[in-house]
Amino acid sequence: MNEALKTLQRQSTPAKALVEPAPDEKQLRQILKTALSAPDHGRLHPYRFISIRGDARHRLSEVFGRATLEREPDVDPAYLQKQKDKPLRSPLIVVAVASPIESPKIPEIEQILSAGAAAHNVLLAANALGFGSIWLTGANAYDEYVRAGLGIGPEEYIIGFLYIGTPAIEFPPRPIPEVSRHHTQWE
Ligand SMILES: Cc1cc2nc3c(=O)[nH]c(=O)nc-3n(C[C@H](O)[C@H](O)[C@H](O)COP(=O)(O)O)c2cc1C
Image 1 (cartoon, rainbow, N blue to C red):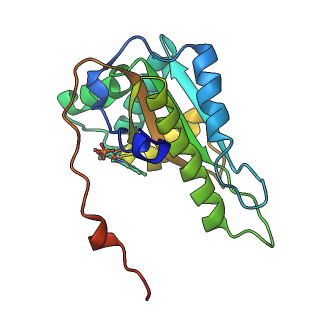
Image 2 (cartoon, rainbow, N blue to C red; image 1 turned 180 degrees about the vertical axis):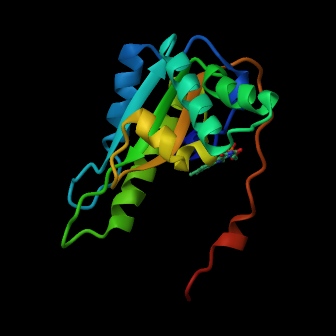
């Protein structure tokens, strides 16, 4: 199979179907190195990653819980628990953060696109190493209390919670849309 077709094999795995083992430290470094090789106008590398595994996931669980209570003090306890359980679903979470800088030459949107390309490289590299993953955001990604809990700066964005692990079950290949619906060719 050629390399282009290999990327077709990447597909998301529901976070709760991701189990141990997650990439070890060495594999994670390798994955993040591929992230750092993403297209990047001006070589700014305008992003950073926070990895959370093992017991540290309980810290994120607390952050999600506190954020939910700040948003909705009278929240339904079952919903609160659901929010707190989110980070405990998968063995490794990589928080992808776009960190655009003020630049006269490189607009913020280009820097955020670079961050997105880097995050996608994380998924592709994890897949290449035999792991499953899913890119999730939801209300927590945009929540000021989650941002504070994770130490996100005022100019930064949480662009994704990348859940990574080993798929507990095999999922059938996902459908890919017809290319012709998304492509025109000038003659
Ligand atoms: C920026 C971004 C944010 C996303 N946030 C969510 C999310 O919060 N919840 C969700 O179910 N899927 C989310 N997705 C979509 C999934 O990651 C995934 O791509 C989708 O379920 C399709 O599965 P596939 O990757 O196998 O095609 C997001 C994708 C991107 C690129």
